[in-house]
Image 1 (spheres, rainbow, N blue to C red):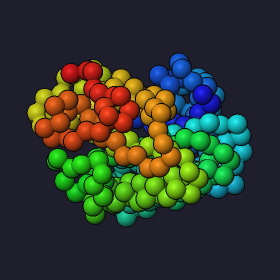
Image 2: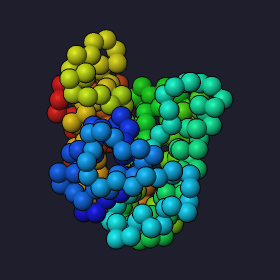
Image 3: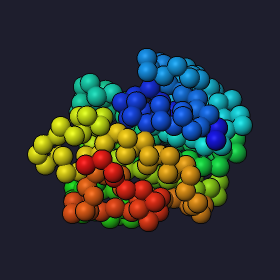
Image 4: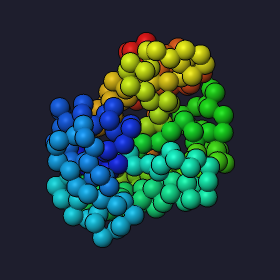
Length: 230
């Protein structure tokens, strides 16, 4: 499958994109090329709509992974950047993909769309009020609208603390119960691309909480996915 990964040079992408590249024809689009990726790359500012239409020529799926910076967490400038990427950028990219005939979109969301993610159902509406969670929730609204507008399956993967496998296995304490190993995260994206899904918006919780005592799952039924690393 020919795929464009927008935001494919970031932390989560480092866990996912190399695995995607084994099975699919992947083009990464981001501000800078990551040192761990030597495949196809396009320099892209996701808020520059003029760059987007040509990106999707012949593309079958879009994975939207762009996110704002970690630095300056909570500041006004930081908040603006997250809304730029998670809302404006997501809208422009998804619209360009839909109008170009892309037939599947995987939107990278987060458990942070909830003010309290304990035992929240995947069908629950986001209710976060902080800039990060709120902007991610707004991105889901955009993705949901596109599923209806273009009559295609759009999958929002709500990730819970994705970590490199070694870091995940070394975790202790409360966060260890909800975090997700990188290789499991990568399999979730592959499953979201491959699953036989009807047109519409599908929210999926991706967490290493295998017994679902904290994070309520949906990935097993919808995508045939479950965490394997533990």
